[in-house]
Image 1 (tube, one colour):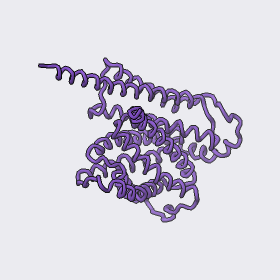
Image 2 (image 1 turned 90 degrees about the vertical axis):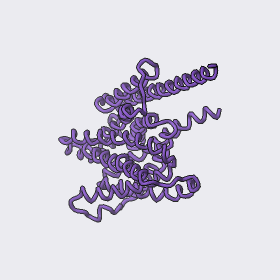
Image 3 (image 1 turned 135 degrees about the vertical axis):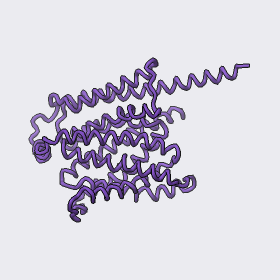
Image 4 (image 1 turned 30 degrees about the horizontal axis):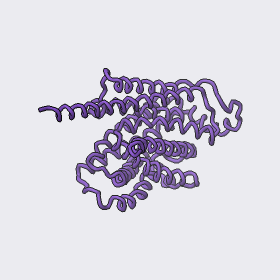
Length: 351
């Protein structure tokens, strides 16, 4: 029973993490539609995450925390630059040039990117002669098919076919997207680049977790670096700095920043770091497509957006592909344990 609970803890954790991140994305979409600058959101988000996690890290890990070395600090700085600052900036920038659904669909490719990037570094191995290796390849291909279905195939509307209210609510957003349609390819490239960087973060975090296995402290430092980097990036990208852009006026903007900082960049990154340590980068990133599914559920229930056949088909494919990929990884792990057990028995029985 204890072994069963231990195996399912990372699964339950990742489902909860992606549900929380889906709420972050919905709030960010609403906030960005109100004209809040994307880098301002990232800077505040990381600052709140650092303030929220620092006292927890000081109390919870006060006795076991190791001393920080210059090498580890450099790794954390690089991790923040790749997995926090550039990832969030590129994703939000791509969101401006495309649509929310289209930009979020690229997140579904993160497990595939992680799997492909992990192969040359030896963090993942594929034996095409084993069932696990075949399942990994097949699961990745199914995930790609689901992502393409979500992105390219819209299909028939399944709900709210004559909802005039939904059309009014989304009118401003659709007009903004139409004005930038000529830069659609550029926005797609930005979203894809952001997802590749996020996939790279899982690999970097796997290395950091081995030398510094303290999730609260490392995430607090990560958020601190991310806040500084985002503020500097704002100064570099904005030709004229208007101080009014740093003022959050509405309750929605304030709520979004606080929630995205404390939960999205705080607890969620702590949880993902723990899952990377427990199960590896591929397992952790394999749950990323759930964000798109949860976002679609929130859009349908709270924002009253249309539900299309392509979204349902794509979501089903993503879930099936994720399950096949995880089964392949689990099967490979079992085969390794069996081989190690057989080797130990042979060595024990040898004269």
